[in-house]
Image (cartoon, rainbow, N blue to C red; front, side, top):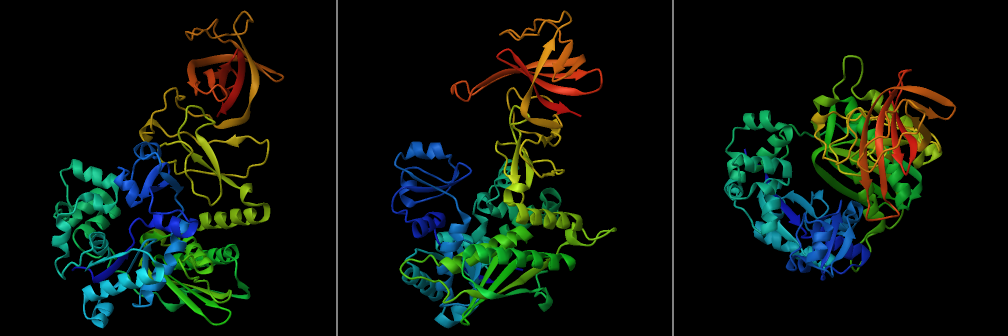
Length: 543
């Protein structure tokens, strides 16, 4: 069965437009928005110079030297999009935010009121232009996904013709690069080819995400039929004696409500797919917005959308006219407007699934509240040639992105409460099967268990008591026999190396040239040693 008739409002190049609205950067010139050093959006003038989404920053600047580069800010995009949604709501009801820059609603109501889908689309485009001075396009089709593609083309797809409309669209429209690349290598080039595959085979081969994409390609609504209206007791409400007027204070209150909502849903074995955010001001003004998500909203995702929405309400970025509430917020309410049974949240044999993790999260968040956000860190494994390069400590709750590209971090990550001068434990390096990107000169496995914050001075002697040296051809002056460090002196039972590395030789202030060794002593301990400029040092310790 095809999805319901859906009208989707799409604002082209929204991250660029949001930067103009909030930061005053003119979108008429060549502007790009970058995330992770890659272009995620560009202006029309930038496209005329050959700039495209997905280009690296340097390549984009090479094609257009006068390019203005703006860092990606999802909060800015959501805040600036709030007036657009409010403008659509002035002529239609039931608006759902798909993402900043796109919102959808059922087409039936506006079509009947304005005399047809085409008339409704024209009225909404006119309303957005008059109220917000923002260019928009509207598409109508069966289902949200198809309506989004129709909006990019400015088309109204006739009822029942959505699958035919999607059949000729390339597989890249799914916006899943890995899946699209695999499908192309299998000979599947269009959505029509993908939709022709048996659904059961797609699920078994590509999993849940692939099956969801298959539904889109077939012209089906991407919301599963299991979506139902949640019972009233799933809502969470916060009432505040002091009105919330500042964004940071309101966001803190919204985060607490988001965690309560997630816990309540988890207790019922449910997960949220569509979130309603309601607020009441001190003088009785009522605000309401619905956010939807292609997957399942986690506690962090719920809190993030609440923060975006509150930021949009309290700052009210709109051209020409403010949209701030008339008074501070005294009541917040989160409504799980769409929920699904989530098997991963069902109670386990010895207790609720994830209960220990949730307790740990609450405890660590409490420590951060007492000592500050920089008091609790979690380690993120990444790429690099040395043990100290491959781990980045980020505050608990922040985005866990590696400092250098690498394969996904192992599942058994850990938390460290970091104090000045303490050693930092490092997780075990994954095996070769993890397929990490190559790093020439990288240490072989196993990885050390403990990386010293500062290398400890050491001396390595051969059998004659002479310090061991390494030539430019990586030849040792003698076999390592004794390791001396601090007040200790240990006999070396075995060693491996050297592994040379010459990093950033083009920048004298940042260059490092050294040779590294793995050394085991007779008492069972093992060390990672380095020799640089004739000086030995202990960098890390193995289990």
